[in-house]
Image 1 (cartoon, rainbow, N blue to C red):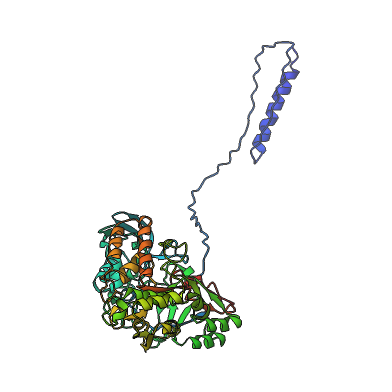
Image 2: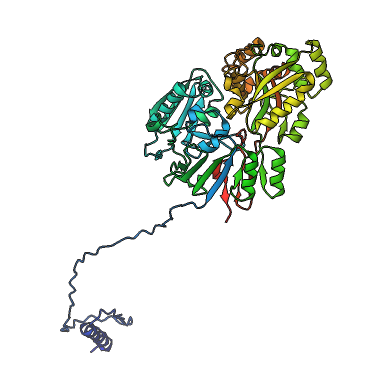
Length: 555
């Protein structure tokens, strides 16, 4: 019989493996190795009966519903709540709460906390910053504004395109004559949709954005159109007027931060307070005794006193100071119709002495400063020359006359300077005290033959329209200079860069012919206590004002 030992070993191994599987409670992996001897092929039927008992563990699977809760971790940013009070002393009297009916740039210090426009000027005056519009597109036929969503007025009225249209129409109907004039080339405003508004031009006007960044563009809640002047200012701005804490005559005004305002960066303090004080010496005492954090003083000796005590003065060309010869027709004072008399008065003014003694700022004999828009390089030398002034008066017959001149507060030292300058010419200024700055620059009512009228138009185009053209607001006697009228007519519809040489020529003529006797541009500075605040910056052609959002209170 053949050797069956290898086969028996294989069978024994197989049986043992099956027994292990049957006895194990856990699944086992059994490796079986079959050994075959290759030296001999065996063909033999072997009947082997092996009984294997196999236990099978049945696992019943149950479907279990499990509620999975996904928790999203959200960073909770605490609500911004500003702290502290910023206290400011303002040197001009309050007018009213209606920005559409005001045109004194210095008023913007107390209007801007409450009201916003679609855009505002940057501090340098060279660009615009979005406010109630997030962007805009201008072409030769108009400008389209895309409005900020989710804004409400202090009274809860939603801000949208229909509100912008209503405010535009209100300015055109009841606004100050100057503000209406600035929008003369804007024919209409229309709501394209809820958050898009279009201003349509009757002819292209490159100054519309400038205009809308100031009084004419301020947005008032339509709910108070009829009552805004009654101590009821309602805007969208960062601060809300607190009538309960303010004086009824607004010699003291309090503002609380608007908790629903869209830009907390414009709310550095919880409260803003303004005290209206025309006596600039009182400003000095107030800031030195820590009654105020900021103040607005333009008299040089008082500024020096504050700076010696450690206060800091912020400067920027903010307002042009000049004497306007309003009665160029000789209606009240016949001598002023003579160009030789006006030119003599022009040569008798020592501007260097003025800026050393009276005011802080930048000397100029014409509308613009060197390098500024429409500065004339061709203007004749009209600096101080008393000998030439006397010669011109002699040519005119050496007239002697007295002129009433309105004055108020900070105007007094300026008028005194002009009075002393013209006394040698035989011209006497009779200083007439008036009760507000409007009276001091006559407001075009024709009550005075001359007056100091601060130049605060943002562009010379508006300066010419207001002060030199026949229908100008500050040309109350309707004087006509045909050369200037013709030059202005050529600027209509031109881009501002193309119109600049024409405006420069107008500036030259108005100075050389003695219509406006320029001193230059004052900074209309603001002083602040560096121990209390930082970031105070006078804005370009914004006399005596600063943007609250730039300011920080010291700890």
